[in-house]
Length: 291
Image 1 (cartoon, helix red, strand yellow):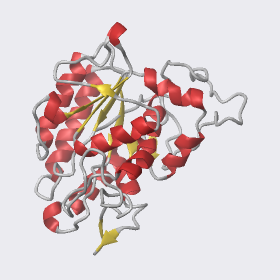
Image 2 (spheres, helix red, strand yellow):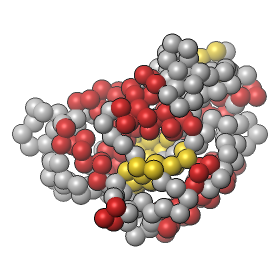
Image 3 (cartoon, one colour):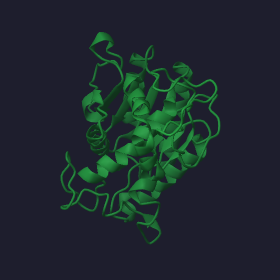
């Protein structure tokens, strides 16, 4: 799932700063930016949103949080994305359902944040990254007249040692083509989710490699939601130098996923409480893409 920013963006940062309008500033706007609380998109703020993005979202003024609800955004994903959607809903931000033939902007029937799973939108299960890319592109182009922000998320089964470089190539081509075909489209990139097991077969090393490549490739122009950094508590959870999702973030008996239940070691879903907390950084990523 992903988003990209306009080339006019400035001051990329490795960690998001709290929005100036945190309730303490009387004039939070920067030159050329929309006024506080405006539904209009600005040029965005590229950079990496990691663990500190959770607190940064909490510090945003309510009027700024409301802005993203009016931005035509497409977020396609699979099961971990469902955990993030449910978490966002618990934080007061709902992604309206996006199906196989839907448009992002439904006109009088609603516009704003739209979320869907690949198995519904294109009958694509996990482990098929190239078909997911194809389906997202088709959905985005159907809404090219009104789509403003694109968010594509890989599943944890999509990136493994045997395809990581091919995934990079396909993803970069996809981004470049959409950027050309929908001028002004902004993106948020999401580093691929990790699982708990660190065996070579589960591919966490490959997922981390692709995540780092995303940051190196896009951080100066787009927003990257570094899900991996948050899942690992900034790299503190690893085994034999291979990163893994931390026990306090994974779907477990003490914090099961609202949608996906309790994980096995080869899965990477988020617990309900963890999803509510982590989704704040996703919401901040969307905000940064359009601020």
